[in-house]
Image (cartoon, rainbow, N blue to C red; front, side):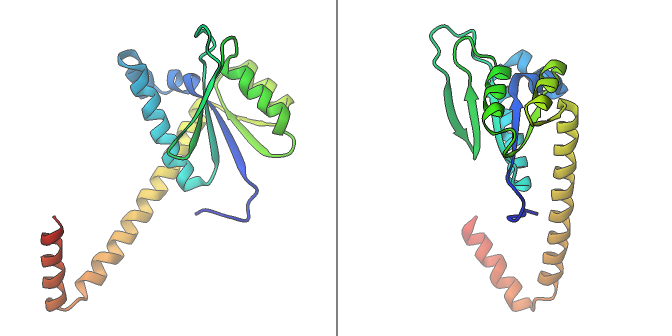
Length: 176
């Protein structure tokens, strides 16, 4: 599925916008915002793995006094917490000004005004719902491929002679 010949694509995700737009994450955020963030990052890290899209998730931290902003990596995803007085939208706009016309950039947000700004700065936009559907479709495709692979493996094991099947079973017992 990964295509090394394709130009790198970047996907900026307005983290809190997505959390507040996806039903399950919104519900979870009412109980624990941290758990909702982690679940979003888990979903996006798996999506990045199968899609080869470079994902940058941006969370607003602009109301945190004295915050200089932080960047970290979570399972291959760049996670940005904005600095004091900088919203996720402003961070994304600033980066788009730098790379939007030379790289393929999409921005996931359901904020209509932000979508218009993204388009004017050389990026493309994807709504929270569209991203959710896109990720769901990739997950379905991956699950179908896993089922096919498992069936092939089951057929191969079925063709094994009894002696090798016993050896495999014994080996699994030792490992477990």
